[in-house]
Amino acid sequence: MDKASCEFGCRGSKDKIGVLIAQLGTPDAPTAPALRRYLGQFLSDRRVIEVNRILWWILLNCIILVTRPKRSARLYARIWGKEGSPLFTITKKQADGVRSRLQAENRHIEVEFGMRYGKPSLESGLDRLIEKGCSKILLFPMYPQYAAATTASTYDAVFPHLLKRRWVPTLRVAEPYFAHPRYVDSLATVINEHLASLPAKPERLVLSYHGVPEKYVTKGDPYCCQCLETTAAVLPKLNVPKEMVIHTFQSRFGRDPWLRPYTDETLEELGHAGVKRITLVAPGFTADCLETLDELGNEGHEQFTEAGGEELSVVPCLNDHPVWLDGMSAIIREELGSWIDGDARKVLDCSITCPLKSVA
Image 1: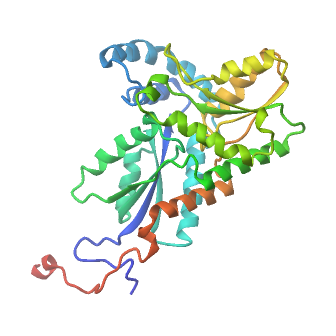
Image 2 (image 1 turned 135 degrees about the vertical axis):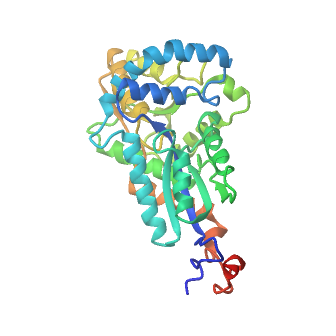
Image 3 (image 1 turned 45 degrees about the horizontal axis):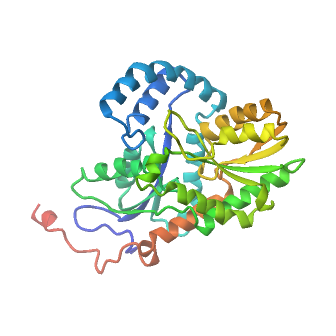
């Protein structure tokens, strides 16, 4: 008898191990109604917007959700694929790739994915793992660098949902892997492959991370430092001189100062300075999305060329590149630790009769 999967007592659990891949989220469709729902959920998160809640509710519901969904829908329409949102399709491929790799070594591991905002939700991903018999779950956020607005917000969704259950699964959370060798090596591989495919070498390589307000960092968020450590770790592995690499932050909004230097201003400055060819890469994004495909690929190209530049290329995110699927799987194995070092579950005798069943 397979002791790692035998049923015990009346609970009928096979004590499988679950992995929940957590991504930020995406709207259901590139339409104004879908964007209104998505932005309403996203911008209502206290981790994302840290301002007076009453004033923000008025601004959000009376102005932002009235004007922004239509514009955002047009932007999403520019990147939407036949199978739907790029972030959704790529995340699904990542989950499928990691699942096949892990199950090739341990068939008692289940892998699901969920979105913090939108569908499928993190909560539904947890439910699917528990329904499959997972009594141990590893939460794997797809954010290499920790930020309260992303990583901690994921915890806000996962922890309360699990605590609603009578039998709460054992939970582990993967630590940020901003300097993990497998992540850094994967990043360097994807960048170097892209650079080698270009007809001419770029004059600058811009590493653009998603920005956060400066006040979030001064309050104790380690995000800025972890982004810098990622850049420092990957630099020696790139096939370009260090002096041509620039570290920037993108996607700011509002009037508060965000982490600098800003990507959009950097692109304009490079164009005005006579730089003709640049390559952009977004190390903090593990899957292509609106911020990489449109903000960098479309808007970034316009900003650079209007300032005098000529060629701008964007390195694809790690996506479902085999080196990253191998790297993700390796990091997950490390995080699972003792759960997979031995048997998934050691049972001396699987024939013990449940007292409740014997009474019946």
